[in-house]
Length: 185
Image (tube, rainbow, N blue to C red; front, side):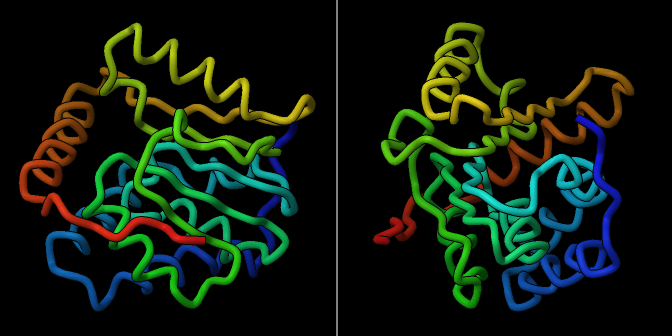
């Protein structure tokens, strides 16, 4: 599938997505901006069709899901993440987006498939092999017959980038509050 050219409006969505986090705590803002710098979010988003249902597995604070929602109002984006504190941020910043919602959980908790696109960005490297296989099987079950599964994982090279991503994830996980709001819709 060729990468679609980003329109001017779609390209402008990333600064708008980042701006959603302006009122968040400094640690969240730092994490979201570092995420943007370490991950080619716009290049990945270019593979996502402008319409359809999108499931973002391991959505974290919702940056990628919000980018997708801002790029096209014809996308319905659902994000899941096991970390309640990250999902609480995603829910808070996406309150004005009618086409994005977030829930605490994993792909195993999602029952409203099929999805046209499922994205898994920088999650697999955090999981042991059996959990990776289980996640991929669950995503396959949730994916429409002609759907698209987009995977992006951290390479171990360059070493500094991999170590930074691991450090940042561990720091956010260690400093996070154990409470969050579950998605009710």
